[in-house]
Length: 137
Image (cartoon, rainbow, N blue to C red; front, side, top):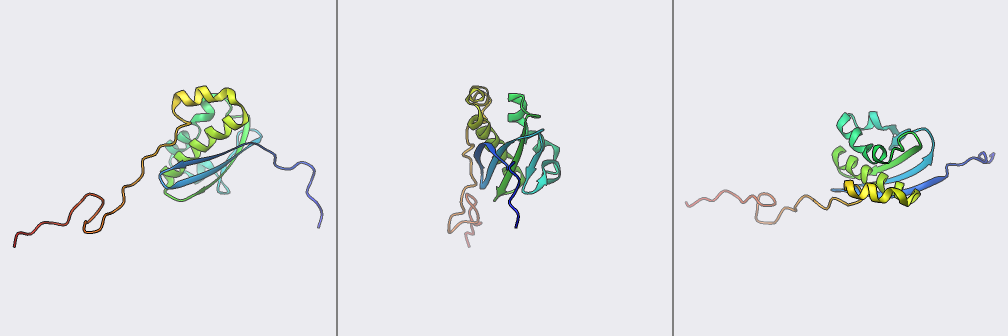
């Protein structure tokens, strides 16, 4: 088996983003702006264009949308949570590459993890807060 070429995929920055129950591992590489999520193009993975624009927000703030290629591995949750996790991970990876981006990303709120989670269902209840219907007789 032949060895790979000398040019390997060197990660310029890495970041882990989280949102709801989704986790995104983000790898920043040198390139022309391609975003790959779980082996697919970001536009085909996130069918909703709003989610794609949410994903690209840190890149537009730092004006690096055509400077890096981004490879993302997402697990857990739904597509909206995964898009939020990707945005958080991209912001962290950009800061890992260059600390000058931190202040701009932090003022926009992209460096902060959104801690809101679904409340768990309690026993003796129909849902997290909803009770069973009361019957007097």
